[in-house]
Amino acid sequence: MDFKLDKVHQLQQQLFRTFAETEIKPLAKDMDETEKYDLNLLKKLQKYGFLGIPYAKEYGGCGSDTLAYTLCMEEVSKIDASTGITISVHTSLACSCLNNFGTEEQKQKFLRPLVDGSKIGCFGLTEPGAGSDVQGAQTVAVEDGDDYVITGSKIFTTNSGFADTIILFALTDRTVPAAKGLTAFIVDRNMPGVEVGDNIQRMGIRAASNCIVSYDNVRVPKSRILGQLNKGFKIAMGALDCGRIGIAAQSVGIAQGALNEAIKYAKERKQFGKKIVAFQNTQFNIADLQTKIDAARLMTWRAAIAEDNHERFSPLAAMAKLFASDVANQVTRYAVQMMGGYGYCREYPVERMMRDAKITEIYEGTSEVMKIVIAGSMKLK
Ligand SMILES: Cc1cc2nc3c(=O)[nH]c(=O)nc-3n(C[C@H](O)[C@H](O)[C@H](O)COP(=O)(O)OP(=O)(O)OC[C@H]3O[C@@H](n4cnc5c(N)ncnc54)[C@H](O)[C@@H]3O)c2cc1C
Image (cartoon, rainbow, N blue to C red; front, side):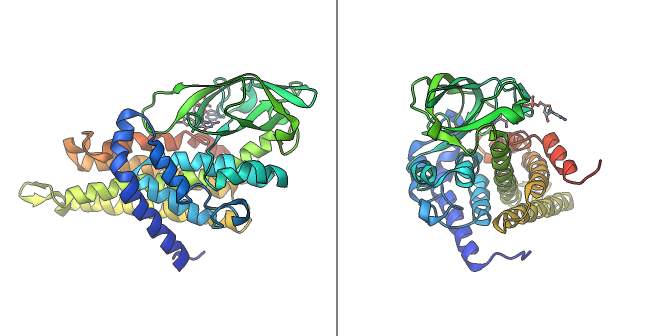
């Protein structure tokens, strides 16, 4: 693995950084306070190709790769983790399912408008009784002529407040364990019977849209089954593997963003006649944390490059997410500490970043689930 980015990736990184600084930074605090994503910003993400980075040009994407996508996730999450998750759920959960399992016709019809940015995607797997363990899933799809009729409820569906297309998982065979009876469907948010609830109030990533979505006898044509009947579990798990690389990159971004803010502050703040950055304790902590961030970034790139090379990347993605999310929490906690009372105030972004960091240990598989994936890949039994 080459630890230095090539020229193309360096240019992409610079472009993402400039966009985040100029377009996202002025809005981030306000979006967090109002708990609303700025839809004009969403339009800009669509317009500038942020929503189809790793997908082929023939489907309207940028024709780039997963590594470039992680650079985007890091740079935007450095400034605003809510923008990070908005891009991530659309790109690595919704689009990856269509890209990896869609028929050519489905790709043209449903993937193209997502990756060219004219539509937004979301991913409905988690239910009130089925989080880490899909076994508790209750949403059912019953065959009726040329359609399936779907009834149930999904919780925590990110982007659902403004998404157009939902990759929805429902049970099509209730006589077997859920993992063997789940099917993926391509559902339009405006189909009769789909109802999106209010934004769920949260600790962090408060600007992201995240709602309960109810399905009341939603009639979905069989042509909208994604992949094979009863094979949805594999599709969901494959998407989450991709997603974890994005969340690892988001964690790296949150961590680097918080450390940068704290260093900037420490270079100005004086106590005991010295700038606080001059205390050896401050420098040692900064050195420790920057080392951890770099390690997390390299693990994230390693997983991304493995995916780009079509190698097995599931345990690499889990390791990257496990490690990077822990680093994001350590760094943001310390960034607040380094800035003292000011770090605790909403005037400075590290307060938001510390709240935002927590979710990286929970969504797209908790840290405990990451350990199950990693240990499972090690043939320990
Ligand atoms: C802001 C936000 C956005 C989200 N976005 C989406 C989305 O877009 N689409 C979607 O489908 N879902 C989404 N989720 C759901 C998310 O992926 C789940 O919250 C997560 O998988 C954990 O499930 P749970 O909350 O039900 O916790 P639980 O599964 O109930 O877990 C509770 C605790 O038990 C632990 N635990 C569970 N099983 C084990 C085990 N076998 N061994 C050890 N410990 C275990 C967990 O690690 C955790 O600490 C989102 C969640 C949030 C909060």
